[in-house]
Length: 291
Image (cartoon, rainbow, N blue to C red; front, side, top):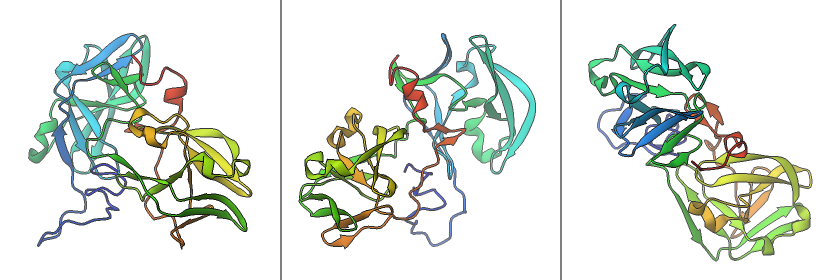
């Protein structure tokens, strides 16, 4: 979830609402200090290095990191003859990012005509997530998008009865599922492989990437394409679901305590944007989370 994307408090499709006497604006922007050292690298060059990064939370976007201009390597930003307009923040000056012998058009931007209420962002520049090779907090690589302090994953054991069916065929039957609660998403139920008919799972090509759980592999069940997935080697933060399997309730029957589950609205994640890169390429083409 996060503060402003998916179904967070400032998102357009929020599942909650503020208890206020007067209605809030349709769009609220929120800025805060990251309070972590953040760096950006292009090839062998560290093009930005700052302990004074601000995060901008904007409805429908992942957090975007803004670096002070003085903390960006000289010569990296080449102003373009391109100025667009942000609905709340005014004119946006775009830059080509020049480093390591490469040029990346539209790779960074700065708000140059900020209204009085948004001067926190003055003389700060944001880089498109896919415009540079890598972002780091201290010496650890951050993949997918800027770290969101409002996103969390909680994993709990339960004794509830979960059954997965494909018509008359029972695919899984367990009284020891694991439930994963992730900010902005409906609960996801994971099953140990010992309680699954392994012959029903047909591996398919292609993976997806979650910045909080790792790479997901998918399975087709009968006629139901990509009806199940597994984080075969989940990241340490989500290790309790590593190699377990979860099933998509809009593609196959999933029953919890004799009640059929249904996919909840607002769960779709868009993989690409200037603020994110949620595909496996960033991990598969280089050493994941390495220096």
